Length: 376
Image 1: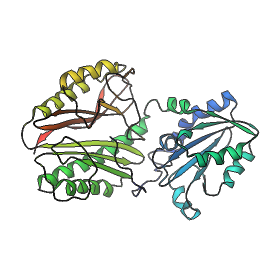
Image 2 (image 1 turned 60 degrees about the horizontal axis):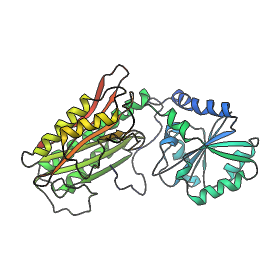
Image 3 (image 1 turned 45 degrees about the vertical axis):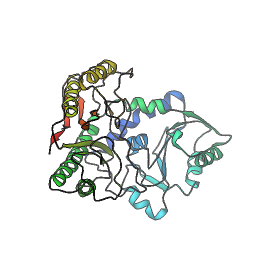
Image 4 (image 1 turned 90 degrees about the vertical axis):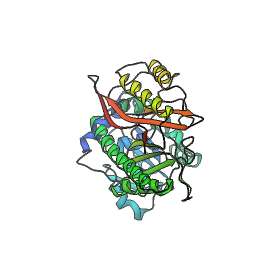
């Protein structure tokens, strides 16, 4: 789900060395080191910003709170991390990453100095499609005449093709926060709160549990559409449909809340479709066939969810691999999926059943959370 992105990240975020020790990042960096050695590249440059930072967070654990950051990873030696923050913020930025050398990105001299110590050759880039033209111009100015740039996003994608065990543990923890937020939304709605007061109560619970970011969407029209709340604390429709996404220790999880004023055929079909989806979640299962089976069980699709029945989730709310009838891929093991089946009827509105799940290599489906429509 696409939600409003905050201007500044406010929640708690730091490098928890107990959960993600340094050797975890040595393992993650190994494919980059191998690619540099095999291709003769002098270094890799990994870019991310406050909006999108999957690769940067995966390799460095650093997530920009504002603007951008650039990891400079040489073929030999320790990386350097430039963060677009003032020098007074650097002590706090150090707490977010294992990278020993973190500099202010406003002082471009650090990038110049990094390139100056490398022999002329090729620099590989990851995430540069996110970079602004102005910043890319600064990069070009520094490397002019000494380095060529080559895109290496595929190498990063291959390195992240499955979720590592420590990642799954963190997504599980994030899922617990998302469930706690959803439970609070449910509790406050049942106690008589309006839509937005209930949603804000859910957000507060997640933030009190040290969430880095919380985003919610609510419906004011019986589950027909979802939208960010707009400070209109006077509406209480007969049913509640809400979405909450939580970011914890860099990893996302999500949950839906669907409380109905009366029994609904749309809710029954949504639950039936989710049953089919979870039952068909098998290693290497064709996504096309699975999505067709779910569509047959669920019938009409909810307009707010589009054609997708789920996607991979992790360092981004939507890491890709959408599950829909035109997808050519297959279900992957060791990969956490956010699953949702939404249906819609003109008479009674919409309903959504959702879950988060992953498959171990032996084919076991591990359900992190499940939320079906229920009567309030």
